[in-house]
Image (cartoon, rainbow over all chains, first blue to last red; front, side, top):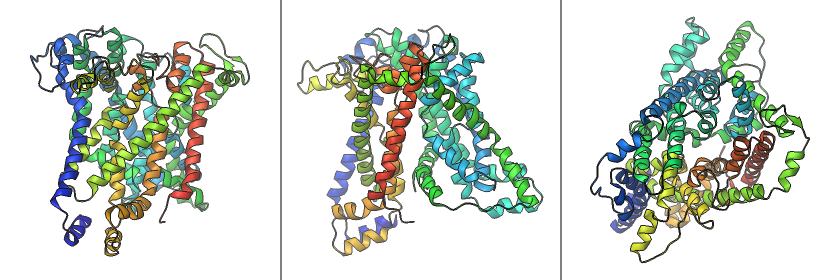
Amino acid sequence: MTTETTTAARRPRPFLVQGVKHAVVIAVGVLMTYPLAWMLVSAVRDEGGIFSNAGLLPIGGDFANFAEGWDSSDFPFSRYLVNSSLVALGAIVGNLVSCSMAAYAFARLRFRGRRAFFAIMLLTIMLPIHVVIVPQYVIFSQMDWVNTFWPLVVPKFLATDAFFVFLMVQFIRGIPRELDEAARIDGAGFFRTWASIILPLMRPALVTTTIFTFIWTWNDFFSQLIYLADPSMYTTSVALRSLVDSTSASAWGPLFAMSVVSLLPVFIVFLVGQRYLVQGIATTGGK
Amino acid sequence: MSALGELRRLRSAKGGTTVASKAAKQEERAAYLFLLPWLAGLVLITAGPMAISFYISLTDYNLLQAPEFVGLQNYLDMLGDDRLQNSLRVTFVYVFVSVPIQLAAALAIAVLLNRGMKGLAFYRSVYYLPSLLGGSVAIAVLWRTLFGSDGIVNRGLAVLGVENAPSWVADPSTALGTLIILNVWTFGAPMVIFLAGLRQVPASLYEAASVDGAGRWRQFTRITLPVITPIIFFNVVLQIIHAFQAFTQAFIVSGGSGGPSDSTMFFTLYLYQTGFGNFQMGYASAMAWVLLIIIAAFTAINFWASRFWVFYDD
């Protein structure tokens, strides 16, 4: 804000420059959101309408596409929404517990190998999943875990999303040490300190983790495609994919309707939690 | 501090001190307990499977019969595999065309938004939304339709008088382009990171420069860019790593085939087909290691090159 006031005071910016800036930002914004708006509108438009009209007004709109799409696969779409929710819920709980434990150790406790482990943890953030997916698949299939949610959820309880460990380490470092040291002096053990001092204070980081885990799990396709082959276990991602395969070129309405349904939870979470999202990537991404 | 800065700092830091008091021992035991889930994950989910993956890459393995050791045969086979080499080319084009455009857009919009823009929070949200949705199946479905023969893009072109435009996703010369556009479309995430970085450029620098008579462009190239080079570096490294692993978009837009004519056959998609379509687990594992080596190599090159253009003030 200081930047704004000082430069503005020295050299009053012409109205025109501001106008052009706004025009550019708005034009690009419209261009970017247009596909989304079009999908939304197409979902409530009848068949002929999708392709014959590039506009945004839902002409002859109704919710028939939703009704049709909802029941056009083996199970009603609600089944897939529930499956996705279960996977996301498991992943969220797993990440919150395991990542906050690891982060507390890295940020506050001294132990041998801390530096090496921390470096390894940072490196695993960048590790492509493909390098481990084949043996993981072999292991999980021998455990009979294929077509269950376990391969998607159990790793989260083992802090494999190192990104969140790092995010939480960053956050804990910002909490004054005096607070947990005072608790230790009062006789609280490490576990009590973690649970009753650190966790409550790092609530923003936990919220950010929850939101990101939800969105990433909800959008995930690769691992869900690999582990969930039985339609009764499909998540929305995998169900949508099979809907694409079974949709003829002319019947995009129901597919679009279900696409909108599948994006809706992400969109709502975005609306509610955008403050945390922006802070989250800014703190881990920024300097 | 970014994860990358953290790594840089670790490399230059000196060894820690070891205190052998009773309290220190207690603290160490607690630390390992807190780390237990992470350590178990490291061994069981990451490092262990990585080692197994390397072993499998030296075998012929179809999941049903026991792996048969073949040495480096899988790696040698790649040298004669035209489809694999094509998939590498497709992936490289995707990464090295889409990432620079995406980051340039992210930086340009971030700079526009940064200095005293009214409604910043709103615009930031609008631009950020596509990055959250972009990786989903639903958006890939949308893209397939947008750029289809009867899609909105061609409808728009028809309005402008361009008739008989191709079906962008069905034409081998343009299909990859639609995926590149999709990746550029998700520039919001790096943009938010740029915005956070821009806010840390000291206002005093601009004041001094404008007293010296430096214009806007000069201020941008001489102050803004140098100061945010660490942020640019962070975004470059991260987006390259991400782009190499892109999968969903190509899978959905091409219907899982990587077509037309393998023009959207990302390396990851070929890996998936090899491993989980044909159950050639040995070959797929070898491919995964090649991917890891490629990503590691480009990250290393980035780090090496960074000493010539990234300025750290610490």
